[in-house]
Image (tube, rainbow, N blue to C red; front, top):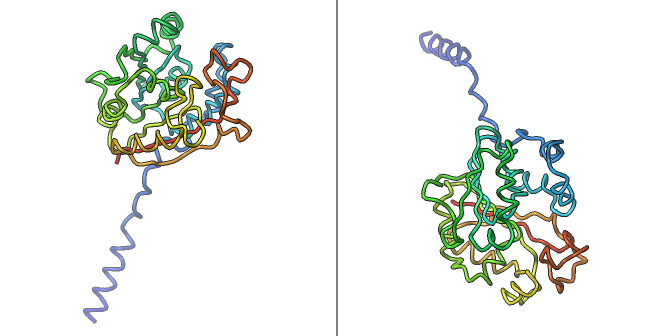
Length: 256
């Protein structure tokens, strides 16, 4: 009798407990309509003209950019991607935009300053630094770092890429992502065409980044172009009408 009573009371107590709370949703899942963000009416026409070849909605989704994140873009140039990142992280997020003096002096000083003057970009933090040490000391615990169509340029610019990747690793929080997009070089070319064709063999990037401690977490095919022979100069200044049609690899590395 006593055993039956205890079992009955135990069953009642268990039934009276509320069910366990559901795990919190992923911070980025469903948080942003990336297509709507890209379609924002206050984006410039010049930016819109690049969208077809850059597929920014797909990139933001692949990088899992969400509200409130602290992210960095290296080689921000004139700020096309940096502004999209700012729109995605929203008013509670922060974006570091890095350029080195060479980029600023040769290409980006005017467009970058104009970009940063837009109200939407008021929380982009400008970082004028060399790629060997690309982020300021306070840039710690970052959620994301992106390097778009520029890893190959660090080759001919004689960047210490091992040091650069190590600095990015330190700046990211555990679980943070390092996203790289670049023009595909032909198998076996390594870094030999980084300056002449502005391309790099994908395997080189994989090996160099994982050597810094990252693990490959994903790859995207939304910028693949199977018809690209990979034998022409993909630099924006040289590609002409073929700009945006090169075969590009998209890799996502995670800090364990």
